[in-house]
Length: 275
Image (cartoon, rainbow, N blue to C red):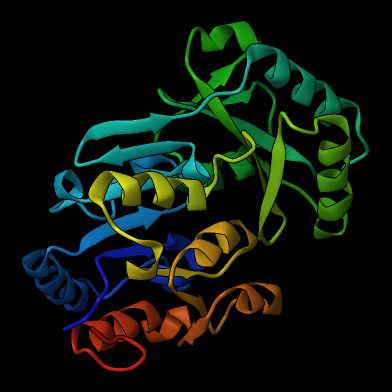
């Protein structure tokens, strides 16, 4: 019998293949076994909660979502945690983004009620972002957000300027805003400490689970804290080397249904999973 009591999966590049799909029948069989054994299933992603739910319509009310890179945690339709920037920090970050030299920079603000973009942003990029944000509204100014809790900036820019931008955020907003990248020119700005690893820690304490009893999968830099936290941490074969160095094990690529392969091994009690 396996010693795993929680399974946490990143979504894009990990649980999903490059066509943004997964083997639903194979997963359903795995999930039925996990549910029968009391193993918690957690979706831990940088994506919006409303979008994540849409991938699991039959079981969304009975699983857990660590959404927005850990900023918002929903367990079986109950809010467990919701972080937030101060409005002053939001305004300061917007000033940095507007005044900096970051070619091709586009960004949205992410909150509990919706994600937001300023009027005039590139229409083609918005089409892509609507795939990740099922709630996305146009605003003319920050005042249009009202009293929504804002907990993340989702940025996209030229790969060549990702590191300079992240360095600027660290230098100008140290202790108030943290930058994390999932690759492909994508950068998230989050409240320091409100990452996926923090989310798993909150859930583990809530459920009485030790880190050594957690199986986690990821492929990006925003998965690093989660992979460091979990006792059974798997980087995908398609992950960059720096992510593989953080994880304890490696799973087959996302296009090979690597997550499901490893979950099946776990359920069968095969190495490295032992009681």
